Figure 1 (cartoon, helix red, strand yellow):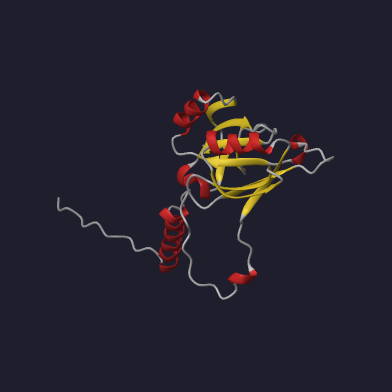
Figure 2 (cartoon, one colour):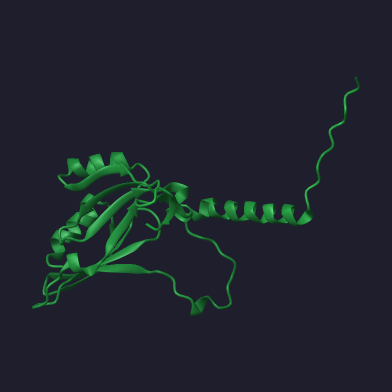
Length: 196
């Protein structure tokens, strides 16, 4: 019995083009320039001056010296700029240990009350070696509210609060940082898109 030749099925051109476009989109998402700490390189944009670029977040503190010690000594941020009045620290701008992220700390104005529990803000800092970093924080007597744990959306998270009560999430997502996350729905058991 002679062997029959296998014929290669040709795919429609439309399908092949769609597949190439999907591969290109995935490659861009996983490109090293899209990973934490990387600076994105983009083509010149004639309208760039009309588009916002995230610069920094500012937190208000009741005791700026104490907050400065926490962010500089415990988390490793580097001071960029500060403003003092009569020797008292009123403002401090910090750069993240890696990447281009900056954070500003500002002393609460006299008579005003900072209420972090009502601000609805949580800071997220990605750390590649999260478990090791959390052990180093513990050695510096920083209290973690929740130890590192894998979350349903596939990211490892640890939680703590700064001296003024601002919530902080230390996490590790890797290449998943720029991808949509999926988790099981609490009510239906079906997969649902989750935003973190």
